[in-house]
Length: 271
Image 1 (cartoon, rainbow, N blue to C red):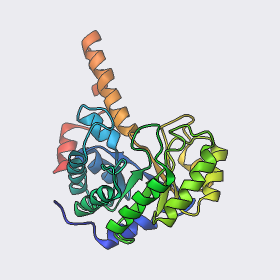
Image 2: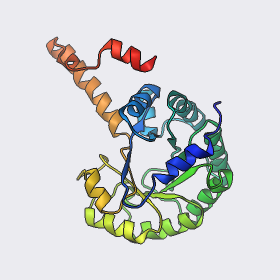
Image 3: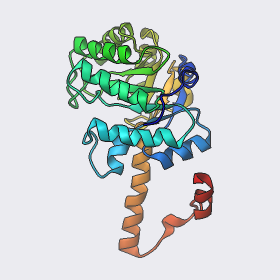
Image 4: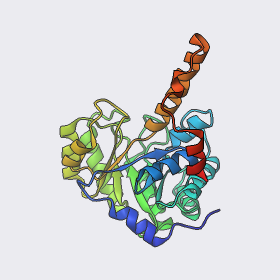
């Protein structure tokens, strides 16, 4: 395993999390995508559990924690910038198991990570259980060693009062030690603005997951601290593979090759 992320790297990553900063955190699915994104100029990179699973030919949620951590380690090794790991719901039924996952993530050098409060898609854990899991994660990785991004799936689970429930859960997770609150599935601008006003911590939203897709400038004006894209980049890349495959099979043409980075440029970038 690689060495744990140093405290300077963690501190630089945490410093990006300012309300209204709206820094864009792209999600990589392997070492190559991570290195390209770092070379583009991003200050930090996240992983995507969906993207990693898709790249391995399985559905999101179809990988165990050990395999996922192995893939995340390859991403960490490929770049020098901070990496935030998508740890799904922590790969365990108990707080102690979640703590073990977070400790293992720290050991491979990540600077932070997400933890969800839904082990089954569409089914929220009781808030007390979610808080216990965040507390365990924080105990395993004290502040300054890991940026803990507590994800709540209130909108993804279509909770009847998603706004109020999000704020309630955010308060509990912040008290448990979360550095940031991650709210995927919310897309209404007014609702996002209300959330950032009510939640006493940096707020992370996803661009590209649901419609409408708000741009970074709009999200910054709404008070968002962190903008990630989840599996959207992976879906874009694999959609190109799908379209290219259909073009080759059905038409025998190769227009998808127009405008690509050359083989030599990839060799140079990855050398």
